[in-house]
Length: 489
Image (cartoon, rainbow, N blue to C red; front, top):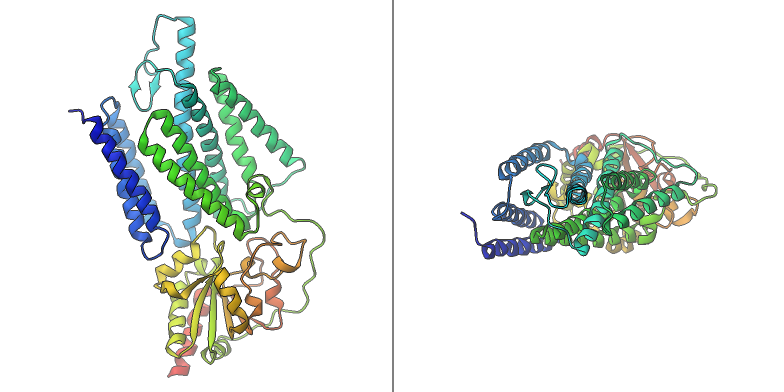
């Protein structure tokens, strides 16, 4: 029995409300978990409503694909480590862009074949499966309006770039591509590839639909995504992830218009808007303009010789570090990706609780791009049970460092590097940082003497007021806990 279109539209409307309300609840750590559940129910309702469309075909294949996808996502989501969450986000985001591009490809190929048959035999319709449409099954293809055709091409372009670019981002975060790939004239090559994709896209959007042009269009679009992402430095990955998230949302919205599916349009617009806003915030945190994010060579060295760093790294024992913080009045803990790798967040919070029980005022300082994706450190600290009122953003905590007795840096590197303010030749020059160097004393927990994700030396580690506590983050935090308990005992 076919469901009334009014009821299906009502389901889409409720799903849209759940998307928006879920996104609103994600703006606060206290309600974020519920927001994800709300949005998830909205997507489930939208999928069910789509399956109930009167002219929907191939329901069995669609349900089978959904079950396979849900099972794979459930399995991988439960197994993935928190340290691997950024690359999983990049991969899943790429899958969204690829799905939007695949819808565009299906529509363009279907209409190209339909047009070819009509030219050769104008009184016949193409037979299945040559004229298969993903929403309406194997029937003669209804001509797309000029607007729908243009948006379909644009969505396919954006989705393809997001797909291939996100795969490169995943490979970089996974450690499979551990360096930037730069060659002379790279920006010109990128521009030519993009221009070629745009020119062919315009031809497709104006009705010049041939299989050869469609194939060339997608080859160039996918190639541009690769070329745009390969030169990006690791320190800029949070910006890249949020940018491609916005791309995926836009692509889904455009392809939703082609399919006349309200749920896709609304969901894509919400994701696109949220991703665009997040990209702006991340660009601001990196002190980059949106134009530089889109067209610049991320993480590129500005030029000139880097400033020499004087002094030496001065080690400290866990016992001395624990005493220093036990008798401090104010301690600020600065977590970074190294804490995530060591899975030390629980031990760090245990240490902080011991300090608080002694009357020490403890806060956690979060840089907007600490870790490998936006909000990475917030998620880790929330997982450990750190109260939200102890977690302070960069703009609010920086004025407090001069009156902070001890700043404990665990696993953070580039986001506390003073050369971002002092060395124009540094690739991170101009990036706002946590002013940890202004604290009276700094203790840095670090596995070794290696550089951060940006691949540069950190002047903070050589400062007169800095001491290095070498070792694995979790082991070092455990030693601090043990030493503090000894003092209390």
